[in-house]
Length: 449
Image 1: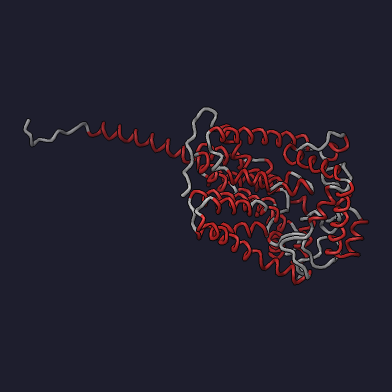
Image 2: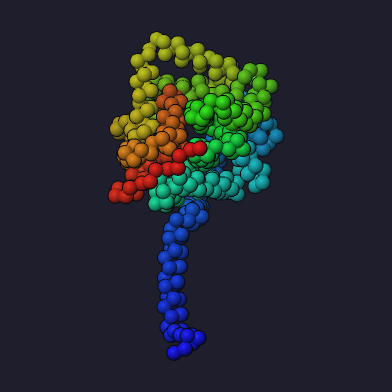
């Protein structure tokens, strides 16, 4: 055979084998990408939440007490906005301007009321659907956070867990409250914290501060970890940059909340940065009624005597009276308040309040709540322990700081699964890491610049 001749292989057989190999590889790759796809997790979670919403929206349309169940106090404020009376009247009567709540979520409810024309099936479906989008969308920061800290396998487990997470479904598709939006913003803020730890950028730090500001305008308790996290990020850098790294996000945070703080100062003639009902919440959780975690006797909407005092003294006067009352009680009976702090702490993490028969009849899902809470707590602690063994706690510091700082206010006031909800993504990430890393070594995360 001449050296200029070309050897022609069995072309058909070669092409067939190559096509088979390529097809099998593409199929395996497609399956892997589909299982890891946050978009698919979002779609599955959103579809499930919207289905539940279709069954639950009539619950909020009861005409009793002028549709009290449509958002309760927050729904009352939203209706006041929609009717042109401003941010006011969180209870049954026109009690004037209020700072009971931060502004963003009541204005979202008011927008749904304006579009749909009042309290009706359309407005109920609209706000619950919006909640469902917020809740399902939380899968994106969860997956990204888990991927950065622990790898793709943990991210896949965490994302699918969140898509079918019972509390995520209930608090979005069955409750007209801020929980789903607060959880989304808290997760985004923590993700940004981890990203800034890995690679600092001044522009991203400004966005980080603004994210915390928006979170504060949804649920002020969310920002409790922000000062600690800002100091943690700033002090890890060279000294000449410390001030700038703290000043940029702090300035953006203050700029974001400034309009609302100014409104409160102009209306109440005193500085109220975000909301003013802290001492009312202390009263709800520490008024001596131990029949429930949140007893009706402590709520203005159910206690006519306290509601009468509220209308007589006005909002600022009533809060000042509650402050003086409970500071005096704390000095006179410190052990009672320490015991209540412990009980709220225990309930926050384990779901246990009482095995009293009347309490369990009044709250029929407390046993299930206790089972889910204890299971999540155990898995989270196992995940933290395994992260410590792999020397990953440094990169997990923002999550640990949030776990330590965020719930502290609820130990003093009163807790509930709704208030714990912003921490659920953290528990899910650590719990899924505990499952994913049972037999596999985990590589250390990238060190910060």
